[in-house]
Length: 203
Image 1 (cartoon, rainbow, N blue to C red):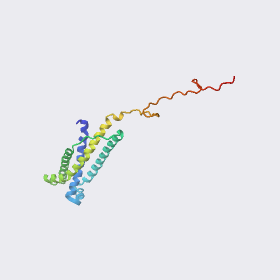
Image 2: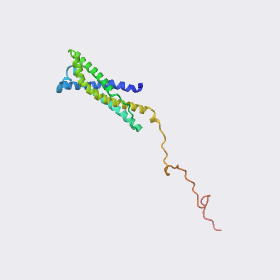
Image 3: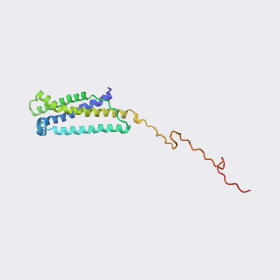
Image 4: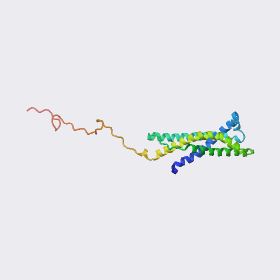
């Protein structure tokens, strides 16, 4: 895999992991605290979380729209379907899960330090992190893999020079199909090759 094909994945996967980690954080707290999850995540050391979720959600939605716009532009300008390279779903899902779990554990530890509380037990971090992050990682892997493959195919289509191959339009022929259009033959007068002549003068 060349560096040009690798770069979109190197950018998309860490960003997607950070965004998905916040969604997994919300899911984990919703399962753990039930209806009181939002209240628990909006007070104390968690007060930053609603604003962060809104910012991450807006940035993620914008990125998805931009990717879909690029894919649509390549489809419209070329008139052909994009050929996506097959991705490795399980590898992507496992990579996202590990990154999301690291972000979740870091957030929980940072919140405990900010609140002056004891650090959460490692078992609790791993358990509740897996409960919230694994389902989100599976869904994010499908979406990110589909979008990255489409963006790579669209970028290749837009930069391969095929869109610059402009050819003059074919000349429409008014004759029968398959026959060349010949110039019209000169009109000959029935009065002779010299052209039209008037009636003879009386002798």
